[in-house]
Length: 270
Image 1 (cartoon, rainbow, N blue to C red):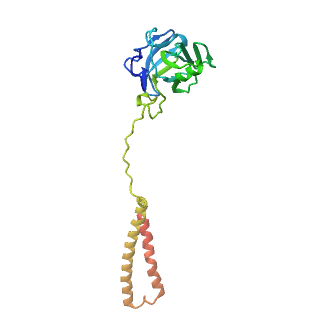
Image 2 (tube, one colour):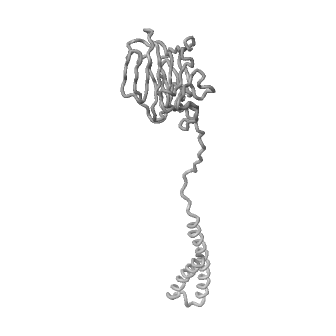
């Protein structure tokens, strides 16, 4: 299927956002369903495969069971979501000895089992979305002592949600991946809001305190000035008579009069 095509970098065989994600896939359902839904976690359309029995609900690539993928890229990557149910996928490869080998990976397998033509391996998944990286060349060499040539077919069983399945020539870091190949994509840059900062100044006095402190004080000063003027005029009149100047009682009375006028003025203001 892909044997004659140029293979380097990334080769996608399933993308849930495309117009027809299952063009090259065949579907098998029994007591289950395969449909495309909207996932709230990644805000995107995904392919959901659910069934009461793992072995009876699955998708297979290529769509023709007799055809072969012919993909020589050694790394298989799956962007899938953990549904907290039984799940497995199976990869069929061909090695340099011209034997067909199968790798069956599941989350319900307790230990690795290596047989002449089939190897079953356990897989641990974190809650939510996961990026599963499968090194086909390394597992072929470790399990069978042979070299990986190409991938023949891929089969994904229930229960899982799929974002993308692709092959790569090497493992890429998160920074090297294109945005479409990242699990959550690149977040959008938010526009920076303009912030206006007032220059540092002394804290202005409260309007209530200002009205109570400055207003009465000015009024008292005005009243005091008026009283002092009247007092001077009265004192001048008394000096003409010649009796109040040297008398101490008259001086004391003159000093106490502005105080009485000030208290009356404050009571009238409040």
